[in-house]
Length: 303
Ligand code: ASP
Image (cartoon, rainbow, N blue to C red; front, side, top):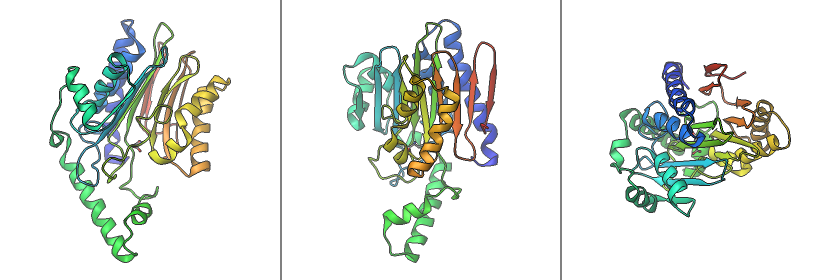
């Protein structure tokens, strides 16, 4: 997160927090709270979700999202959708109104439209900042390619390291616990910059980018998706909490595990049924915010 984007990120997570809290305060469901919080961040161009997302190799926005209800273990996910401003709304419809858990591509868009979620044009999701970011990134790749042996895949790998300032991860997520003791989690993303069309990340995969179970924890992750999905990281963290570890500790452990086991980078927010929270990242920054009946805080670094 570059310095000039810090304020926008803090504003964004605080708006999302307020939207989620409004639901909880009037006695609403954790599931509704995480949906409303994520919608706010999908609508905010600051983040890599909804409009303003990173572009794929073809210059298109391709979105993934998942929402999960910890009380029933029902989940709804969409992958590689191109015509939804708010993929989390479609995911919620899948959770609530479909016997299935997951829809991708055109089928997901068709399902959404049939269930009252409006479709848009892909161009409506693309903003100039991202067109420029992709242009710069691809130009850099092409330059490295000519210096190396022209192998696209390995060239991309060499660009994608932690020190490269063009690489950031800006997926959005929310976890909540309502007054009935139910938890929910939601995650939404445009995925990684310059990804291949059809590439699906961790964010919308159950247990990888998102997980909720009232018997353990609600978790949402961000970061480089391929390593995260190999470790099924959200479920891994929830399992440690089910085994009696505190969320704060488990979140930190998850980041250590991600780094040590697969050299991954990212962040996680996690919550247990007692309302204890865990926030951790092994990137320099990650915007976060939380609120309980007693306390409210936000930041871009979690020590
Ligand atoms: N995890 C996302 C993905 O790999 C990217 C991100 O978190 O920004 O698709």
